[in-house]
Length: 437
Ligand SMILES: O=C(O)[C@H]1O[C@H](OP(=O)(O)OP(=O)(O)OC[C@H]2O[C@@H](n3ccc(=O)[nH]c3=O)[C@H](O)[C@@H]2O)[C@H](O)[C@@H](O)[C@@H]1O
Image 1 (cartoon, rainbow, N blue to C red):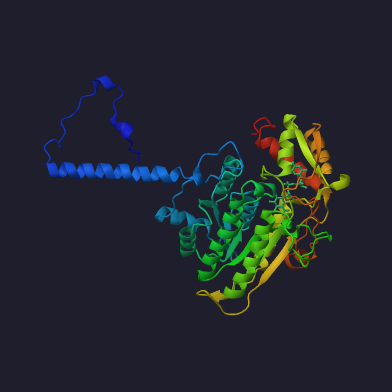
Image 2: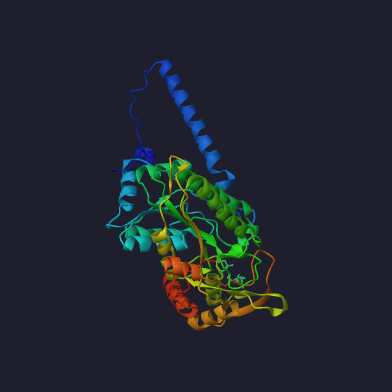
């Protein structure tokens, strides 16, 4: 159908425009005041619209990153066509398949998990708010990838209770894979409220809707290796204390684990938290070191490599995305059903936390050496003291619990994983020429 627009009424040669005699000319005074009222109402509604869309949460990005709030875009949802798309995307296509609501589906891990679920015949519906924490065009490209494989990604926020309720009305999801979050350790000092908004308020909102859904879904969600904080006992085990987070990001993830306990305890929600260890790979996050090191090395820009006190090594248990996806699917497949209904718990429900790491920490300096070899460019290394902004000196996962209960077994070392990342990066950014700042 042709879209009517006000432009359609304007002739291409304005000088020749001849006004037709309006049939409204002889209307009564009463009718003209109705027209005036309608006109001023429109102006009023327009002003309200402008006011809301210029409110701080949606202001264009300011040049000072510490001042800006993340920009999300206005979205609409609902209607028969929209519901049809939701239903079709979430339709299970195998006999024992599950139907999963994936939050953060246009994110790095969300895209890979959604695609893997769809490939094996599960029903998948994505949800993402497409905010501009990093380049939204990368999120749109991931969305396009998912759409091609039959996954519809609804644009919306996990804080939007009405939207979440609607989704559960349309589809009785058996599982929720909750990956929507404000990520990044260092950015928490610049924009603390975004962490509270997504990782705490958003998570609680989602759990509220899940606990009232009938049937209640089982929930698997992304916690983080950062909850180990200042823990010095290695490798990190799920049994270790996690009461010394070093960043607000870590604190919100830890809070998420406690909130999960509460909803499990009161409402019988089946909850599994996965502590991801520095996940990397194709379609990754541009705010992570391996990603922006690649960009800067290719541009010939210096990179900052952190070191601990007394030139201490800073290392990470870098984990390849395909291994993480297997861990996520293992967690979904072994998740027991929630036990509540109508907001009441019938009997105790499953509550789990697993490390998903690689069990072999690599110094950040070695990561850079691997990148140099793959990109065939020497990095301009700038060695700096580890800033006091939430970064911890090392991470190292003990994964025996995930191995035993989820069948989790990482198989990709950093060299092979980075090779796949570099190939993707060079293809996606046209040999590194297209990369943005
Ligand atoms: O494991 C996790 O749970 C976390 O992994 C990453 O956090 P991080 O390990 O800090 O990953 P990067 O920001 O990519 O940093 C990797 C390493 O590079 C170092 N780094 C970072 C930035 C930089 O300029 N220079 C530098 O040496 C960091 O200190 C760190 O050791 C993610 O950003 C978090 O969202 C996630 O929760």
